[in-house]
Length: 70
Image (cartoon, rainbow, N blue to C red; front, side, top):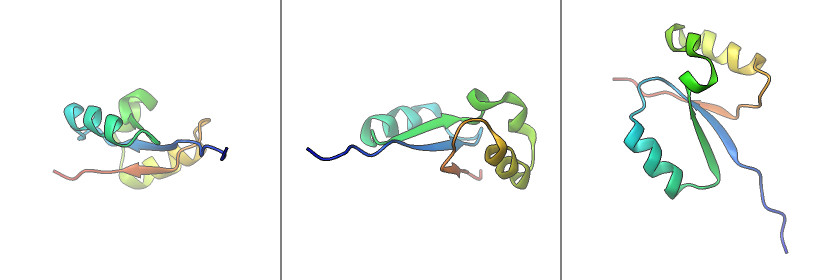
């Protein structure tokens, strides 16, 4: 038996639509998609560079940020 890799954790900006999140969660089970509001509601209003710094300093490990421009 092989070793199962851990999930990749991605923080999602506040513009990401909930129906898309649900579908992606089913289609890509090895990726954990977490909306920014679930990480820290205050992060929804900061600039992108501040998001990167905050996620880097956050107590949980974040593998990346998915940003959707509208």
